[in-house]
Image (cartoon, rainbow, N blue to C red):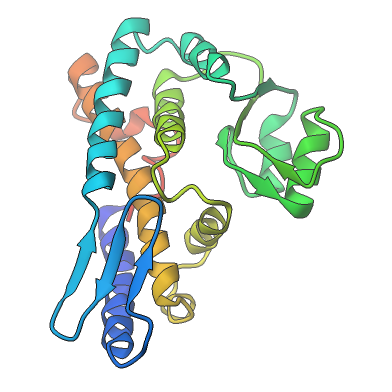
Length: 235
Protein backbone atom coordinates (compact mmCIF):
# COMPACT_ATOMS: atom_id res chain seq x y z
CA UNK A 1 0.00 0.00 0.00
CA UNK A 2 1.61 3.25 -1.10
CA UNK A 3 2.12 6.14 1.28
CA UNK A 4 -0.17 8.41 -0.73
CA UNK A 5 -3.14 6.07 -0.21
CA UNK A 6 -2.28 5.71 3.48
CA UNK A 7 -2.23 9.49 3.82
CA UNK A 8 -5.57 9.84 2.04
CA UNK A 9 -7.17 7.31 4.38
CA UNK A 10 -5.78 9.04 7.44
CA UNK A 11 -6.89 12.44 6.11
CA UNK A 12 -10.46 11.22 5.62
CA UNK A 13 -10.48 9.68 9.09
CA UNK A 14 -9.15 12.94 10.57
CA UNK A 15 -11.83 14.99 8.83
CA UNK A 16 -14.51 12.75 10.27
CA UNK A 17 -12.93 13.02 13.72
CA UNK A 18 -12.81 16.82 13.51
CA UNK A 19 -16.46 16.99 12.47
CA UNK A 20 -17.55 14.72 15.31
CA UNK A 21 -15.52 16.65 17.87
CA UNK A 22 -17.36 19.83 16.88
CA UNK A 23 -20.73 18.13 17.23
CA UNK A 24 -19.82 16.58 20.57
CA UNK A 25 -19.04 19.96 22.12
CA UNK A 26 -22.79 20.54 22.28
CA UNK A 27 -23.64 17.19 23.86
CA UNK A 28 -23.30 15.66 27.32
CA UNK A 29 -20.76 13.09 26.09
CA UNK A 30 -17.47 14.84 26.81
CA UNK A 31 -14.90 12.11 27.36
CA UNK A 32 -13.81 8.75 25.95
CA UNK A 33 -11.51 6.34 27.76
CA UNK A 34 -9.59 3.17 27.04
CA UNK A 35 -7.19 1.15 29.18
CA UNK A 36 -4.43 3.75 29.40
CA UNK A 37 -5.67 7.08 28.06
CA UNK A 38 -8.60 9.48 28.15
CA UNK A 39 -9.75 11.99 25.54
CA UNK A 40 -11.72 14.99 26.77
CA UNK A 41 -13.82 17.10 24.38
CA UNK A 42 -13.93 20.72 25.53
CA UNK A 43 -15.52 23.92 24.28
CA UNK A 44 -12.18 25.48 23.50
CA UNK A 45 -9.83 22.57 22.89
CA UNK A 46 -9.47 18.80 23.07
CA UNK A 47 -7.16 17.10 25.54
CA UNK A 48 -5.83 13.55 25.37
CA UNK A 49 -4.41 12.21 28.62
CA UNK A 50 -2.14 9.38 27.49
CA UNK A 51 1.04 9.53 29.57
CA UNK A 52 0.53 5.91 30.65
CA UNK A 53 0.16 4.82 27.03
CA UNK A 54 3.39 6.59 26.07
CA UNK A 55 5.26 4.92 28.94
CA UNK A 56 4.02 1.50 27.88
CA UNK A 57 4.94 2.11 24.23
CA UNK A 58 8.51 2.97 25.22
CA UNK A 59 8.69 -0.01 27.58
CA UNK A 60 7.54 -2.37 24.82
CA UNK A 61 10.13 -0.99 22.41
CA UNK A 62 12.96 -1.40 24.92
CA UNK A 63 11.92 -4.87 26.07
CA UNK A 64 11.39 -6.26 22.57
CA UNK A 65 14.77 -4.85 21.53
CA UNK A 66 16.43 -6.72 24.40
CA UNK A 67 14.59 -9.98 23.64
CA UNK A 68 15.35 -9.83 19.92
CA UNK A 69 19.01 -9.17 20.62
CA UNK A 70 19.15 -12.08 23.05
CA UNK A 71 17.66 -14.60 20.58
CA UNK A 72 19.15 -13.02 17.45
CA UNK A 73 15.62 -12.61 16.06
CA UNK A 74 15.29 -16.37 15.65
CA UNK A 75 11.59 -17.06 14.83
CA UNK A 76 11.48 -20.39 16.67
CA UNK A 77 13.03 -18.87 19.78
CA UNK A 78 10.52 -16.02 19.64
CA UNK A 79 7.76 -18.64 19.50
CA UNK A 80 9.30 -20.39 22.51
CA UNK A 81 9.19 -17.09 24.39
CA UNK A 82 5.52 -16.70 23.44
CA UNK A 83 4.71 -20.23 24.65
CA UNK A 84 6.56 -19.60 27.92
CA UNK A 85 4.27 -16.60 28.49
CA UNK A 86 1.27 -18.97 28.30
CA UNK A 87 0.06 -17.87 24.87
CA UNK A 88 -1.03 -20.93 22.84
CA UNK A 89 0.91 -21.62 19.63
CA UNK A 90 -0.60 -23.92 16.99
CA UNK A 91 1.07 -25.16 13.83
CA UNK A 92 -1.51 -26.76 11.57
CA UNK A 93 -1.83 -27.76 7.93
CA UNK A 94 -3.46 -25.19 5.66
CA UNK A 95 -3.43 -22.57 8.41
CA UNK A 96 -3.38 -19.82 5.79
CA UNK A 97 -6.56 -21.12 4.13
CA UNK A 98 -8.30 -21.74 7.45
CA UNK A 99 -7.54 -18.24 8.68
CA UNK A 100 -8.51 -16.65 5.37
CA UNK A 101 -12.15 -17.50 6.11
CA UNK A 102 -11.86 -15.29 9.20
CA UNK A 103 -9.99 -12.64 7.20
CA UNK A 104 -6.99 -13.27 9.44
CA UNK A 105 -3.38 -13.96 8.53
CA UNK A 106 -0.92 -16.42 10.03
CA UNK A 107 0.67 -15.26 13.24
CA UNK A 108 -1.02 -13.47 16.11
CA UNK A 109 -4.78 -14.01 16.31
CA UNK A 110 -6.33 -11.76 18.92
CA UNK A 111 -9.23 -12.78 21.15
CA UNK A 112 -12.24 -14.12 19.23
CA UNK A 113 -15.91 -14.36 20.20
CA UNK A 114 -19.02 -16.15 18.98
CA UNK A 115 -19.00 -18.18 15.77
CA UNK A 116 -15.54 -16.89 14.88
CA UNK A 117 -14.21 -18.34 18.14
CA UNK A 118 -16.10 -21.61 17.62
CA UNK A 119 -14.65 -22.08 14.13
CA UNK A 120 -11.11 -21.24 15.26
CA UNK A 121 -11.38 -23.38 18.38
CA UNK A 122 -12.40 -26.45 16.37
CA UNK A 123 -9.70 -25.89 13.74
CA UNK A 124 -6.86 -25.73 16.27
CA UNK A 125 -8.18 -28.63 18.35
CA UNK A 126 -9.43 -26.73 21.38
CA UNK A 127 -12.90 -28.26 21.18
CA UNK A 128 -16.08 -26.19 21.28
CA UNK A 129 -15.75 -22.69 22.64
CA UNK A 130 -17.47 -19.38 21.94
CA UNK A 131 -14.49 -17.40 23.20
CA UNK A 132 -10.81 -17.97 22.46
CA UNK A 133 -7.76 -16.27 23.98
CA UNK A 134 -5.03 -14.60 21.92
CA UNK A 135 -2.97 -17.25 20.15
CA UNK A 136 -0.50 -17.86 17.35
CA UNK A 137 -1.63 -20.00 14.42
CA UNK A 138 0.81 -20.89 11.64
CA UNK A 139 1.77 -23.58 9.15
CA UNK A 140 4.74 -25.84 9.72
CA UNK A 141 7.88 -24.76 7.93
CA UNK A 142 10.40 -21.94 7.80
CA UNK A 143 9.12 -18.63 9.17
CA UNK A 144 10.36 -15.36 7.74
CA UNK A 145 12.04 -13.66 10.68
CA UNK A 146 10.86 -10.15 9.79
CA UNK A 147 7.28 -11.32 9.42
CA UNK A 148 7.56 -13.10 12.75
CA UNK A 149 9.10 -10.04 14.39
CA UNK A 150 6.15 -7.89 13.33
CA UNK A 151 3.70 -10.32 14.94
CA UNK A 152 5.88 -10.76 18.01
CA UNK A 153 5.98 -7.00 18.55
CA UNK A 154 2.19 -6.74 18.31
CA UNK A 155 1.85 -9.69 20.70
CA UNK A 156 4.18 -8.05 23.23
CA UNK A 157 2.14 -4.84 22.98
CA UNK A 158 -1.00 -6.86 23.65
CA UNK A 159 0.58 -8.62 26.64
CA UNK A 160 1.69 -5.22 27.94
CA UNK A 161 -1.98 -4.18 28.02
CA UNK A 162 -1.72 -1.43 25.42
CA UNK A 163 -5.13 -0.44 24.00
CA UNK A 164 -6.28 -1.35 20.50
CA UNK A 165 -6.45 -5.14 20.82
CA UNK A 166 -9.94 -5.46 22.31
CA UNK A 167 -12.22 -7.76 20.33
CA UNK A 168 -14.67 -5.07 19.22
CA UNK A 169 -11.83 -2.70 18.28
CA UNK A 170 -10.04 -5.35 16.22
CA UNK A 171 -13.24 -6.14 14.33
CA UNK A 172 -13.67 -2.45 13.48
CA UNK A 173 -10.02 -2.34 12.45
CA UNK A 174 -10.42 -5.26 10.05
CA UNK A 175 -13.57 -3.74 8.57
CA UNK A 176 -11.65 -0.50 8.09
CA UNK A 177 -8.89 -2.36 6.22
CA UNK A 178 -11.46 -3.93 3.90
CA UNK A 179 -13.51 -0.78 3.32
CA UNK A 180 -12.06 2.63 4.16
CA UNK A 181 -14.07 4.56 1.61
CA UNK A 182 -15.48 7.99 2.57
CA UNK A 183 -18.97 6.48 2.84
CA UNK A 184 -17.73 3.81 5.26
CA UNK A 185 -15.80 6.32 7.37
CA UNK A 186 -18.89 8.54 7.64
CA UNK A 187 -20.57 5.77 9.65
CA UNK A 188 -17.93 5.89 12.40
CA UNK A 189 -18.78 7.36 15.78
CA UNK A 190 -16.26 9.36 17.79
CA UNK A 191 -15.55 6.32 19.96
CA UNK A 192 -15.05 4.22 16.82
CA UNK A 193 -12.42 6.64 15.51
CA UNK A 194 -10.53 6.96 18.80
CA UNK A 195 -10.40 3.18 19.27
CA UNK A 196 -9.54 2.63 15.60
CA UNK A 197 -6.61 5.03 15.83
CA UNK A 198 -5.26 3.00 18.77
CA UNK A 199 -5.39 -0.22 16.73
CA UNK A 200 -3.68 1.51 13.81
CA UNK A 201 -1.02 2.92 16.14
CA UNK A 202 -0.17 -0.54 17.50
CA UNK A 203 0.29 -1.88 13.97
CA UNK A 204 2.38 1.13 12.97
CA UNK A 205 4.62 0.76 16.03
CA UNK A 206 5.32 -2.85 15.08
CA UNK A 207 6.05 -1.88 11.49
CA UNK A 208 8.40 0.94 12.51
CA UNK A 209 10.29 -1.39 14.84
CA UNK A 210 10.77 -4.01 12.12
CA UNK A 211 11.94 -1.42 9.59
CA UNK A 212 14.50 0.02 12.00
CA UNK A 213 15.71 -3.45 12.95
CA UNK A 214 16.02 -4.46 9.31
CA UNK A 215 18.03 -1.35 8.48
CA UNK A 216 20.37 -1.98 11.39
CA UNK A 217 20.94 -5.60 10.35
CA UNK A 218 20.84 -5.49 6.55
CA UNK A 219 21.49 -1.84 5.75
CA UNK A 220 19.05 -2.24 2.88
CA UNK A 221 17.35 0.62 1.08
CA UNK A 222 14.43 -1.67 0.29
CA UNK A 223 13.58 -2.78 3.80
CA UNK A 224 9.85 -2.63 3.11
CA UNK A 225 10.24 -5.77 1.00
CA UNK A 226 11.40 -7.61 4.10
CA UNK A 227 7.97 -7.43 5.69
CA UNK A 228 5.73 -9.97 4.03
CA UNK A 229 2.52 -8.17 4.94
CA UNK A 230 3.77 -4.93 3.35
CA UNK A 231 4.38 -3.30 6.69
CA UNK A 232 1.04 -4.03 8.26
CA UNK A 233 -2.01 -1.85 8.07
CA UNK A 234 -0.72 1.55 9.02
CA UNK A 235 -2.38 4.68 7.76
